[in-house]
Image 1: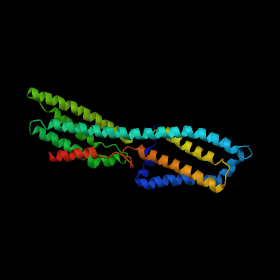
Image 2 (image 1 turned 45 degrees about the vertical axis):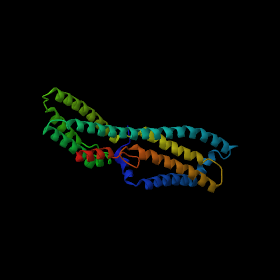
Image 3 (image 1 turned 90 degrees about the vertical axis):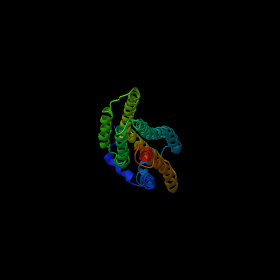
Image 4 (image 1 turned 30 degrees about the vertical axis):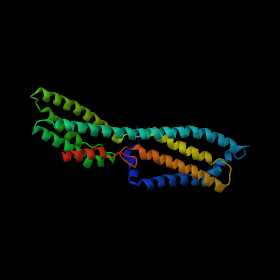
Length: 267
């Protein structure tokens, strides 16, 4: 289960530097407001306890170890999702390039028609499919173009042994291309499970709440707690930015297809 895209995907319309500042401002603002309103209430539970700062410090240290490991694992998972989606895009472009080379050796006008269909598909991916993916929408029209090429390729009847070998290789490459294409489409909506988000946000809130329990000057409380909250906000921003493979600064571009399309246009 992942969080519904429509509920929060609008945040990717915010420029990355502003989104980072917003995450920091929300985290620090939450800490400061809680320090003013909730800290006096929470301090009632520990203020009469001897060595309360030491006890809270020990508990906070143990908690931060587990929470730090959780944040690290979540960040690695988010980055791996982006990396895997990028690999799928590269493999699809490479398979498409190899397929284009194969059909370039078909007799004319059959080869020319096949090359035109592949150029049309590549152009569609760059101009139309990619903007949809950046909105979290799985493009559908590419399937029609891929099926049209598939049907056209199956119409070819080899007449010589060399053409039979070439045709078999083209069909094999086509299957590989379609597999890579499906993997790219599956990764459009990939993201962290909702349970990870809930645990991560809860951990951030509890970390901040435990900092409110320390007995110290109010200004020092705001300064030190604000620094911790700012870094938590930065970490959460980083994970959010990597959560969607095709959105944000850490996102996948259509560059492999653009390079391939330029080469197709020149040939």
